[in-house]
Length: 291
Image 1 (cartoon, rainbow, N blue to C red):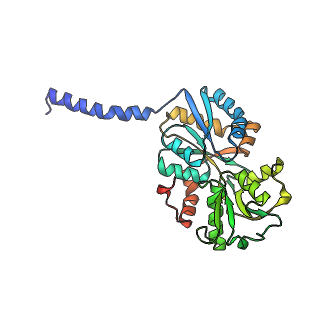
Image 2: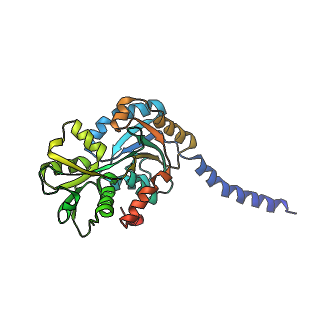
């Protein structure tokens, strides 16, 4: 049998071991939530368009909301990794990169457009330019967006390799222009003869008159890509995580949804993005070594 002193010692050790776990299990419930939006267009425009989202989240969650746009995809991934933001609207592949560096983040919502939680990349060329088909890309520059962008880099790059045997290391010269709209403008102006970006973003740029549809040619579409996910830190309290999840999944405000270029948000999980991990294998990318 245990004597009293030994029993007290074992109880104290057990309690000490359990306390950190209990504290961690409670999670964080900050008074301010930092929400990062993807830097795929001009940052000032994104912040301006996000003001209805900010007001909605403040009213729904009863917390101060800080909307931020990082300088590029990599800095957004690092901000999530080191806990400098609580909620992030990722590109599909930038989410996969973030998950590889911060395994505890949780995707919970995905945009639905035209009734589907997927979208496509469009490969375009300058109207009247030297690229008539994608075979003509060989030996020429090709415009991409951010290196971690799914629809303006990785998906079209994999499309060129898989369907046309065009390798960016040897067969053409990748030119990274940063954002989707920069790619569209560069192709329109003939600064690069061809490029790729999100089909949804291109349609939006044309609708706004920022790109002249007569000055570009849409050549091919990529395979369907799972849409942009919203992810949150896994160390938030269960109650806060559920409130954040419900705020997005129950969102009905047409103005806010329009700023995301979607009709609604649907529930999602990490498994939905395995196709992007397959894309990384096609391109022989080492997720652990990418920024």
